[in-house]
Length: 573
Image (tube, helix red, strand yellow):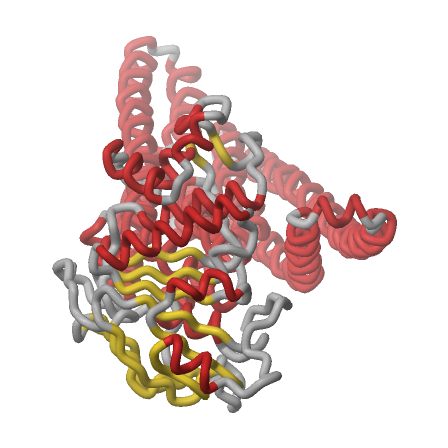
């Protein structure tokens, strides 16, 4: 798994495509043999009707039964091997793509929202479901249908002609059906996905919706969207059902046509009676893949779209990072002419920031809302790629740093603390293999050990869906313990005291002092001035630029009277 994750996107995509194509070629070869073996039953009936019944020879019947059993046994084995082939194809694709897709989806979520990651995982699962489903074999079955057509022409040219015309009619109806319903189905699916995304986003704010009576208005909007989607689905479904009925009726009529043709030929003594029954079975088998071609083709199109989206995600959103872990370091932090302009914008949020911090220094960053503080924090921890310049820790680019070893070096507490689905122990340990000693050390350093002990199951208290609900202050303090896990050398705290009471703030200040004494570089972003008393240096950000930087006492003294750089209004740049 780790090896797959370290390969570049182009190599991952090539290997995934190669695994699919090689498996498909192998399955196509098996399908050819399987289609030949499917002639066993009609040819057996032909021989029994024409030879055994007329000759009344039980020896001939016994030999035919033995041959048929052998052929059907081989058919059973090969059909099972083909099914296993699809399963192996799906397994290889998922193994090669799941971790890279997850990494790219997380990267995309940083800039494009959480829905990107969920959509990518769903599309990867759709590809797996397609490969292990029945639709993938439809074109392979249709590819070898000429085998049955050749046999029908061998029995009599009229059998072959009827079968050929029947196949052309079925194919024409399938293409016409696809033309009528494809656009409507695409619009309906896009609308349904958008509606689900909107309602899922709204449900994250259920408390505000309930408290402010927003549910009726949201319900009306949801109902209107649902009715529109349902209307599109109804129109498309009616067309699909009508054409399916027409296609099925045509197929029954074609069975009658080939039987009638056979009856005429038998009356004229041009063929045997057994060929009439055999030709009906063979033609039915030949038309079977064409009958399901519309649905199968649609599944192929959806799978191709999903693959295209996954490929684009890997090519465009996979962060270009180093693959070799970097040893733990204790060097300086250097921000060198850092510039960042959001995608699609020509106006930079950060405008050429440069500063240096040494181990054991604590920097406080202040400034008005929308000054670029949180954007700077995301660059400091390497989740956002700079437009120009860079952030370096002991000479290593934090954005390019291999994320596993970088995580050992860095602690981060964001403005909005999100704890993952798992126990408190898992969350503090960053979902890694739990080291109880390090978990207890981080919890005590954040002064949450006693608080956790009062929870229903202590460190084993489950959080997330259906789990224990923590208050904002509790989440923030456990998030702080997570940031301090493993005594990182570089810590970024974005408004760490926003939800803390006096006791929590004292614990935070104590933790910062301990980490400073331990030689860590600590950066604080806060609006409440009390926490800034622990800082060695202060930086004042205004409009994406550094307006003041230096020792705390010097910067505070240099701020003009009435100039507001520490406000009580929280904002996120």
